[in-house]
Structures are given as structure tokens and as C-alpha cells.
Image (cartoon, rainbow, N blue to C red; front, side, top):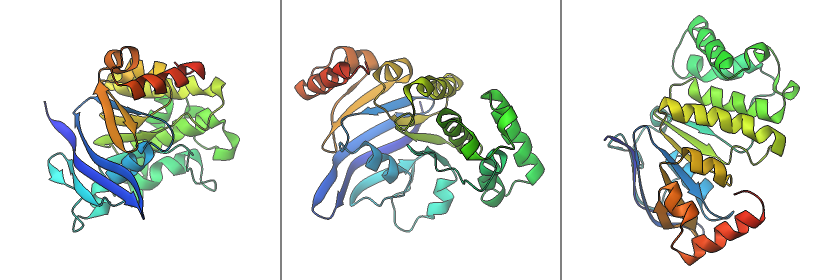
Length: 248
């Protein structure tokens, strides 16, 4: 099986604060790797390092075998292969839904406006948002905005999709419509790395679950192994807290 992403001994600090320490990870093609852990465990920073929004201090990041952590790499060229969806939707408020989705395919990937519009409308239709194409983001619910953000990432045909706590800013009622969209991507074989606090969802989509604490992977394995039969006491403690908060 082809490995889309390979992380080897990643280290990242902000000043004196060590955020990621000696972290290695392999993400095979068509698989979903789920990162769990308390806030501050390094999940979001790791995703930002993969997307080259942060530079690592040590180690190596490879995308389809190419080292992308090399400072001499063309970052913009690499990001064309990556899609990232943030906690906050990051949609342009002055652009319509359709304009938000087609901006990168036209400006970065050189697609014609007609081609970009056609693809965007197909994606909007697929995710139940065809009637929102000409709306502005502030006219949408949070769940609709986050689905548009996911569609915007898909519009560039990413090799790897990164999702950072995509439901954390949503009302609980809206969470499932976003998770349903991600579940559909999983069934399509999209290669994904996602950070989430939704353990039930992690059970459904994860090929591998990695529990992070203080920037290290303390436990990894299938969802059944890590979420339902954890061996590490710190994983057990974390999941107990999550269970008490009603997210398991």
C-alpha cells in the first residue's frame, strides 16, 4: 500500500515551549488517521506543520515520498496537494459560497471559471447545499458554513485532507451534518488526518487512532484498541474525562 504521508521524528517548539517531540506517523493511501488528546496536546500544531503553516525544528515530513519539510521546497506547490479545514470556517465574508469555493481552483490551479463553477456546483449538490451557491456566508448556519469549508478544500482535488476539530465551533445540533459529510469522504477513499473530540465519530471513520499528550504519541492502534481497550493509563484517564463530558 502506498503511503501518502510519512512523518519521521518531528520536533516543534515555540520559544522554550516544546509542543511536538519525536513524533513519527505514517498515513497510507485511502486511510483516515484520527488524532485525539486534550487541548494543548499538539494536534492542531501537528496539522499546521503538515500543511507547512508552521516550520518544524527537526525531523522530516514526506508527501508521496517527496520531502516537503526541506526549506528549499516550493511551499505553494506543496499546498496545492493539501486541503485543510479549520475549526473556524475561514470563509471570505464578502464572497458568495460559489466564489469562496472557486477562488483557489481559478487563481491557484488555473482552471477556467466555467470549469471551476461546474465542479463547485456538483460538490454543493452532493452535500445538499446547491441552493446556497449565491448566498453569503453570514446567511448560512454554522454547519452549512463548515460544509462549504470542506467543499472548498475538496475543490482543489487534494491528495491529503487535514481536518482540525471541524465541529468544535458548532452547536451540538449541527455537528452531525458536518460529520456525515466527513463520513461520506471516508467512504469515497479520501486520505485524511483529522483531530477530533468526537469519539463516537472517530470509531466510525478511523483506520488508526493516535492519542497525543505533550506532543508525543503515547498510544496508537485501531479505534477498537485505543478507544475501547486502551492500554496506556493516560489514554484511559483522557477517555474517562471525555466519557464524563458526554462525548463518547
